[in-house]
Image (tube, rainbow, N blue to C red; front, side, top):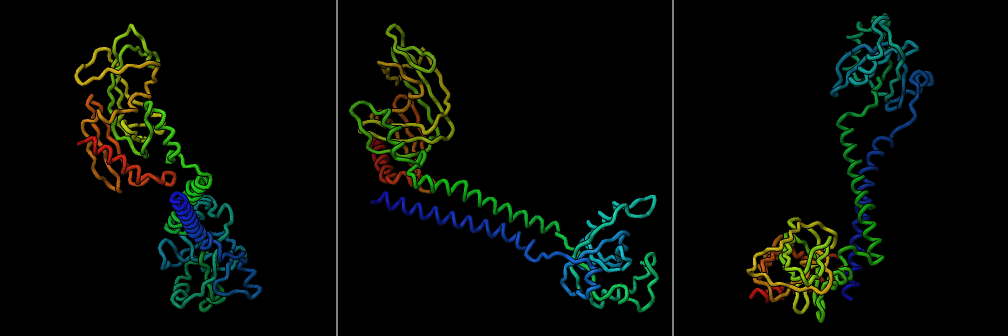
Length: 388
């Protein structure tokens, strides 16, 4: 019953996280599309809008120009200025454009002819001209003498009651949009790259290395005859220094081969990087089984230090990767168990023959290991007895 409750709770938690991640992604990415496209409408040519009497504040318009814009006055917004622009119909407008747009137009100016190589199109919205802007337009009208001789008081004839504010996206806005999109993509990757596959595995009963059945099969391979597995957990190997001496054998490829005419061979097997490992106990043995294929540092000696070295005999070939997987509990000389962060335990084990194991026992074992807490208690209790 306990396993079913844990599995049901895990499925609900994963489903809730999946929905939260998808919601965050939709909000981040959707807000960018909403800001950029929700208020967009097909712009009218300003000359056509004026002819049809459709001018109004906020109307999306566009105009074609074929002469260089003439600077009128600074805008209140940074990186944007007011210019006089004459369209292809020789009508003069006030336009607020960015410095980047003006630079792009200037780049098409032919130095020899003084004319633009190609016309340009400006898109924006109509904004009502306030009195200060109107005064600036009139006081600086001498700057457009290259276009026309505007008679005093002829402001409305030439500029009407609106100016065009170019649609543009600032560099800061682009940065914000990019961050929002990347954040949305990040949560989509979590949702569909991790949470959804995890939910599918949960429904199928597949837990990867965090599976008690996988753990049991892996540890039982190293059980001596007459022993049975009493507890097992998934842990982390921090440091392993294995030393075992085998009598009457030779090393052939990656196997120890029994040979009655051979002497003893000392095998040292070491690893100093973290790796996933199953840790178990039987009635009289401590068992280790790595969850994957990991490389170790091996050393083989025909001459070795006799002190503390118990010579083991083998009756059949032994792969060297199976060395250091089964340790008699009676051979444990010292076991130091300390609490670390996140409820984990650090376990340092020294054997009488000089072997040393440093293991980390996690506080939780995952959804596929519902008995992790009980098994860890049994494992710690057995190791603590061996230390007395």
